Length: 169
Image (cartoon, rainbow, N blue to C red; front, side, top):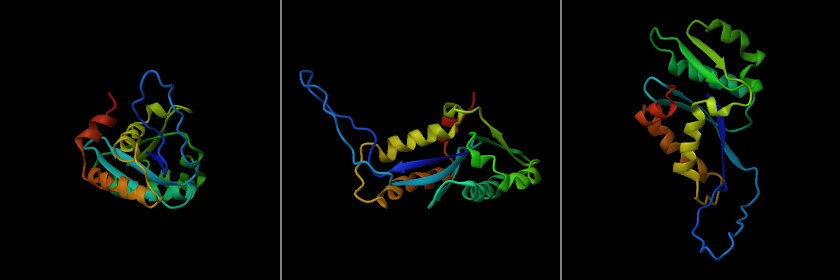
């Protein structure tokens, strides 16, 4: 489980430049405009659970996503173990009592500080950027979700690519 921001302006550009020409510097429009999402992938079948975040990522929105995640992932006798980074709102006292209540079926496991490479969902965000937003121009911020959410909806049904991408082996 983790959160991500997709920015309106691209972060990467690829181009061919003749060897005798010094590499040009491309400036992107500086902005903080972005669209945020919470997301998680069920390793058993590659099913993605996501939620667009309209405001800020904080303890309230984290609690709302945890409740959604719990509802959509706890079916049957299997215990759900959620891998999460050490963001402060993932440890919030706001949902501490709730986490204790559901600990038998839904448990948060926290990664060491400053180790995003260990969180499998980071690979999903990287793939999403490559497939949906890199090297694309979005004239309006509203165009970013139109590019990202169709692939999230496809992944909501389960996907072998995500399953393999997030596999912990």
